[in-house]
Image (cartoon, rainbow, N blue to C red; front, side):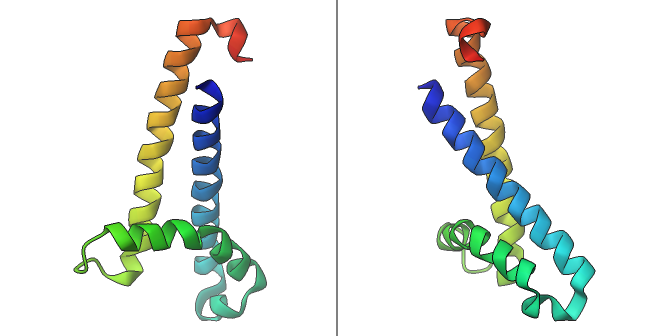
Amino acid sequence: MLLVVSAVKLVAEIALMALAGQWLLGLLAGAKRESNFFYQTLGVLTKPFVRGMRMISPKVVLDRHVPLAAFLLLGVVWAAATLARISICLEIGVQSCR
């Protein structure tokens, strides 16, 4: 169970960092962000999470807000996985979690 929780936490961390990086790079690159190679690479990493959020969000949510909603949902998933990992580690012993 610890392995599953750790894997979920790791995937959430990678997706959160990719979304944050894409947002920051979009600010720095400005209007030319769509032609930026690194922006496109981060877009490939975040596309499954943004598409998943688009599928579960209502249609009234604007497309430009969907990445923010995905970021917030991933933040909740990361926090839940962190709390679950802490709970499991306290249950089985802290030395076993290292």
